[in-house]
Amino acid sequence: MAIPAEPYAFELNPAAAALLIIDMQRDFLEPGGFGAMLGNDVGLLRRAVAPNQRLLAAWRAAGLAVIHTREGHRPDLADLPPAKLARGGGPTRIGDAGPMGRILVGGEAGHDIIPELRPLPGEPVIDKPGKGAFFATDLHAILRNRGIAQLVVTGVTTEVCVNTTVREANDRGYDCLVVADCCASYFPEFHEMGLRMIQAQGGIFGWVAPSEAVIAGLPASGLSKGAA
Ligand code: TIU
Image (cartoon, rainbow, N blue to C red; front, side):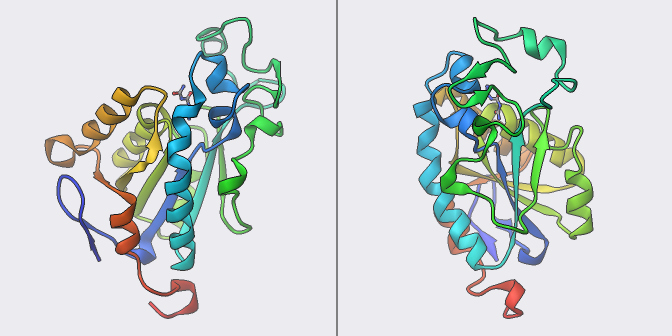
């Protein structure tokens, strides 16, 4: 199915496609977490929640693969680079106690994916210590084992973890379609430029399309039910 996209139509192969939802965690989208600690207005990211809910529901109904990611660190912070701890630090830093538990630490409430997009059993959740979802994770192995070659990418933030992951994926041979209204940034101008950077130069990193176009391009019935 050809999905209208920039810079040209994306040929979706449903059996080889996964929806990759990046870091839709309370730490980035709710007050008192990592995003707020860095001085950001977390409300700016909320605009991506409802479009992600609609796309995720349609994607699941079509029976296609879903993968979620979370950024965070071990409770002992052994995987936290000293520079990441130091940078962006005000009075509160990664690992410190906050209203949603220790900031950006696995197992804490703030590290959870927001309830609106809670993963279902069978949907892998990739825990990553960096901005890209391929660095120091088993994402590449999971995708290869499942025969995934196309990634439909959503999440936050557009210019940080979404862009980093798309660049990593592109270099590993995956075709990435980034869903514009399902991504968001604390900086609206970075969101716009982050999307333009992906599709520029003939799709230097991939494609960009709105969620309605992706939903309209999904198979009508579930692959897993053998109907597609
Ligand atoms: N600060 C910011 O814009 N983003 C991050 O730190 N991580 C993600 O984008 N997930």
